[in-house]
Length: 344
Image 1 (cartoon, rainbow, N blue to C red):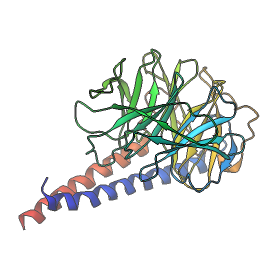
Image 2 (cartoon, rainbow, N blue to C red):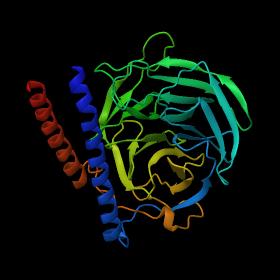
Image 3 (tube, one colour):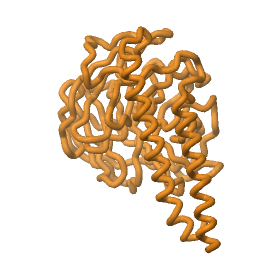
C-alpha cells in the first residue's frame, strides 16, 4: 500500500471501530431496558472489590492463583512498564509487583497460570503488522516485590499477522489463542511442544467464536473454556471447542479480562480504566448458570443484555450483522474515495 493510501486508511479504520462500538453500546442499552426482568437473565454476579491503584489503568490480563489464597495477577496494556501486579481479590489492594526482565513487550493482552508458571501473551496487534508477537513465561511470583527473568516463545501465523487478546488451554493442555475480529474470532491451537528458538505457528481449530474477543480462561478441571468480549461470554467444551452455551456479562466500561477462580464455581472479570472493579460471575457445568458464591447483584454489576440461548447464535446476534454490514459498506466507500483521490 502506498504511503498516501496508508495515511487515509488508518483514520477510516478508526471510524469503523467507533461505529461498531456505538452500535454495540446502543444494543446493550436497549437490551437492558427491554430485558431487565426477563427470566432468562444471565447468571448472578457481584462486585468483589475495586482496584484503585492508579498504576493499573489499563488492565488487560487476569489470572487467579491456585497456590496463594485470595490472590490474582494482572498486567497493563501496551505502552506500560513490563510489570506484573499481584492483587488481593477480596480488597483490590496491590500486594506485590514483579518487574519482568528479558522482555521487549509491545502489546500485552492476556495472562494465564499453567504448570506453576505465569504466562504473558504479548500478542496484541491492532494494525495487523507485528512480526515480534510472543508468549513469555515466568515462575509464579506470589505477593511481594521483586523481579523475574522471562523465557520467550515466539509466535507467528501462517496467513499473516493477527490481532489476539486471548490465551487459554484445551483439554489436552495445548495452548489456545483467539483472534479479535469484527465478525467472529478464530480459535488457534499452538504446537504441543513450544520452542524458544523457532516461531510457534498455531493451527485453526473448532468453529468461529465471539466477535471482538478480549480474553479467555480455562476452568480448573480443564473441561471448559470461557471466551469473553465486551458484553457477552461463550462457554466452550475444552475437548472439541464446541459451543456449550452463551451468557451475557455484567455491564463494564471496557470489559477486557476473565479468569476462573480455583473452585471452578465462578470466574472473575475486569475492565480497563481506573478505578476498576473485580466482578465475580457464577459458573456451572450445566446448561443453566448458578449464582456466584454469596452473590447479591449490585447496580454496577447488573446484567445488561440477554445472550442468545441456542448454540451458534452468540457470535452473530442482530447487532453483529448490522455493525458488520455497516463496517464493510464504510470500508468499501472509503476504498472508492481513496482510489479517486489517488487518480486525482
